[in-house]
Image 1 (cartoon, one colour):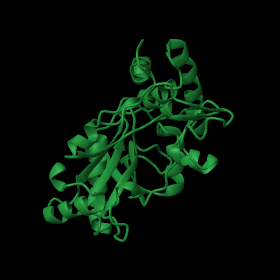
Image 2 (image 1 turned 90 degrees about the vertical axis):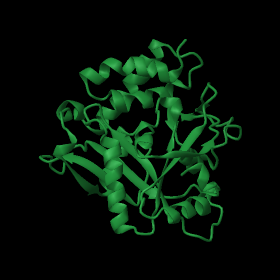
Image 3 (image 1 turned 45 degrees about the vertical axis):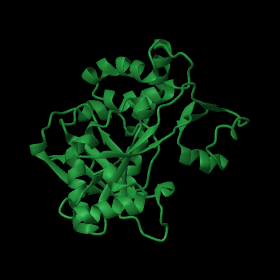
Length: 283
């Protein structure tokens, strides 16, 4: 019996060719298949139908009207306002959980208007991984790439190209920031190729005990804490309509990479002082 990520990969393979939304459906489908003990194709059909309907309800016919071919020579980079991006997070990101950012950056075709769907989007947020901050009296000189989205029809290397442009913007407008960080969840099929292309290294491995689902749909740890005061599955065992995943999960990986290669000593000090990890393990 295939694991949820493998089943989701196989299920969405044809969708990538026919609809263009396999890439955003795949991790979201895998995420919801973890609530089954032994998911099969009928479970995948059920969950995929729910997810696709939800996506289309947020942006009608978005894929049919937006499937197009580009290369990175014909794109422009824009800062996107929070209101637009929050809506975009809701239907296009696998967590379906909007995340406020310090800034949002997107790739667009040169002939796109303001209503067009971006080719790719990144949201950069405050470094709030508090358990990694050794000295809370200091302001972290790092940002978290909290949301990263692209489509089947996005050009190859769109995300690494976009994050490089995000680093350019940060160097100009946020001179105290030296480091980008981002979590990766391999349980839903992510492999980290975008981060590795930027020279990122794993700086922390964090246990993921389970996913949580409320009324059949995934909820993030932030949402669970907001709704119920905790994200601890044991403390939530008596909450009606709340389920947890049925598989043992692989740990989350936290990546970090330098955005100021001309200041290596400052970057090493940042990693050591903010994250409390020897820079020799990262650089």
